[in-house]
Image 1 (cartoon, rainbow, N blue to C red):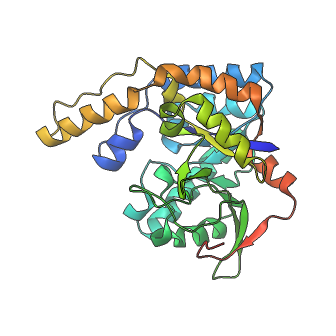
Image 2 (tube, rainbow, N blue to C red):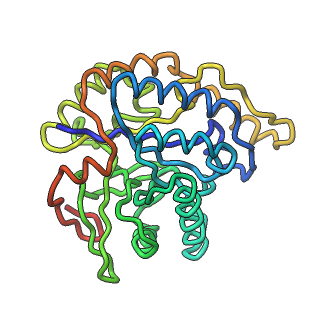
Length: 294
């Protein structure tokens, strides 16, 4: 089974500083160093991936984005800033994705047809975002986590790649993130903190189980291999936000020393490709109603 390998290209503090504290922090050189390791490792295993590029990274490091495209990877959008969709209105979201799409297409001279929302923030309350994505020319989205999560999730959504018919009559393909059923509960696997915290044996078992029926969707962040990430300057934060930032930092560093080995093992034991190629090889994807039930 051909599985999808995806990389959310963002800096370490994009989620916490931008989404939770409303602080703009310039991307650091660590983005370049960590992404170079990914590019070299992918080349070593002759694997191509989908890079969901944050526009803020592309503006500061345009040559990095050009290199990723020149290496044959698929370039997709992660928006301009790392702002969760439920924090903007429809027009603000439209401006963000249009700007991001144009920026990436201008840099790479390649069409950008895929999107992933910051922090998987396409949820039942923001399903309208799928309509906007289709309107501005995106062919697929990979933002939905079919779980009942605390920070994100769309319970009951199909776990398979599916085509959604939208209220306007247009369509978009949804590529949901992978989960596995454990004791009757859907558990996320194959990416981010889930891959850091779970033993590799569990991840391998889960992905092997998933790929018996459908492609597994694996997602990674460049910063997750970086064991040297430093706490950003929190002196100007409130005491409460300082405590939150320190707690977040400690949690994010946990098990990072295991990630490079886990990635190498994944690349050696599974077959991966960009999302666009995986969709094409799926043939006729299943139909999914807009409410995601299925």
